[in-house]
Amino acid sequence: MEWFNALVQGALLGGLYALFAAGLSLIFGVMRLVNIAHGDLIVLAAYLGLSVTLALGVHPLLALVVVVPAMAAAGYVLQRGILNQTLGQDLLPPLLVTFGLSVIIQNALLEVYSADPQKMNAGVLETASVSVGGLSLGVLPVLTFAVAVLVIAALQWTFYRTALGRAFRAVSDNQDIAQLMGLNRHHIFGLSMALALAVTAIAGILLGIRTSFDPSIGGGRLIFGFEAVIIGGLGNLWGTLAGGVILGVAQTIGAKIHPGWQLLSGHLVFLIILAVRPNGLFPRISG
Amino acid sequence: MSAFLRLENVCKSFGAVTVADDLSYDLAEGEALGIIGPNGAGKTTMFNLITGTLRPDSGQVYFQGKNVTGLSAARRCRSGLVRSFQVPQPFSGMTVYENAMIAATQAAGLTGKPAERLCLQVLDQTGLLDKANTLAGSLPLLGRKRLELTRALCTQPRLLMLDEIAGGLTEAECTALVQTIRDIHASGVTIIWIEHVVHALLAVVDRLIVIDFGRKIAEGEPQAIMQSPEVQEIYLGIEVDA
Image (tube, rainbow over all chains, first blue to last red; front, side, top):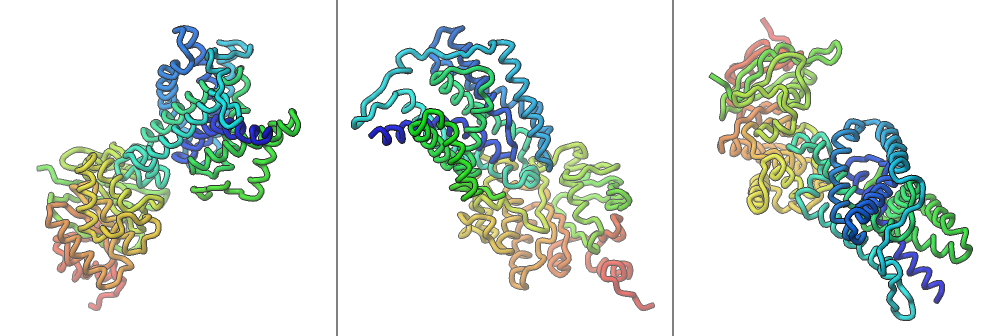
């Protein structure tokens, strides 16, 4: 029962990892951009959420109303202002620029919020739990997982059922032809970054409610996001959710075996999957 | 008088290679113009210069009386100027219908039902309706060529540029394609067609331009042009007996 409990907790934790990963997966899928600053953007969203809750005295979940549009707008501006200029045949410039961005965000957060760990106060939501068949599930992890499923379903729907999604896929498929079909790829890239950072905002706030955070933790969130994307297979959003769950389960099972093994076992499972299935479990994009 | 499409002294070189050398011509609305010339003569480059994929080194391109030389390819497409590719380039991970929808929504600016109706109508016209839900990447050559045409038509073009769309097709496929293109022309779309399959070309166009080394070397009534000695010599590589 204890092991089963660890399994379920791990799966629920995977929802958060899937939220970290969804934005990464989306922008890589649309424009082949690997965003090294993604983890720091998650942390930035958490800090923005903190500021909003403190300034307006509202519940952290209500802060989403402000933080999601703010991050989306920032994403569009960031993409059109900086990142579009780095995209091309060469994969290195976007890596370098987003790495630089990561350093800038971390230092800006240190400057504004200091290095002290912060936490958002979500009141009773943090400790509330429900009992299901002998398992005690935290309401927050269940909520996080449900949000992850909803976000991924919404992204999937956007991709395959809307004009915007078709535009994303067309640009992803062949940028030059998309241009000749009247699509402005710079605008489409801006919109995809906006969407990615809107998801990042949700991930950041849920992270900030769940644990304490400081400006330096972005890198770790980035790794979890990458691992979830790669385990699930590039370009497959539901695969990303599965990847997050596998990573979460690996970590909680590892922690169960030995408290120090939480991160290690997650990484090990990732490495094993990478060795056995280099394209991930459910790949959709090759190469 | 402002022509429908006008190229004015358009020049373009890649290093030492001149691909467009002082190219000028006018095209009237509703005309069907054929372009012939040997491989590497600069025919496809000319299309790239008109659609905006390439910018000329000098010279101007006017479309519907407006100077479009500085406009992006996307803007030009939305104003009704579209091309197909010699080597079909569908969005291969999307279905045939979705390919058409991209053109209808992004280029023609349609939404909802009108966009769907246009796509279905064009798919019917190009004979791809039964393949609507097939992934574009899995179509055979003829299907891809038809998809190129479909996508171009779904942009609701004013000017349609076809790049060797008949190449590699069987005689029967070619005949059907020519009929489709004639119908498109008859519906009021202005056409420029680059083609090596000369008999297909001659069945459609009203005027012919011959290009070699980026230069216009002959222009006029198709039959007369085909029989002119310079075309026989340069285009077909045949020495003309004195």
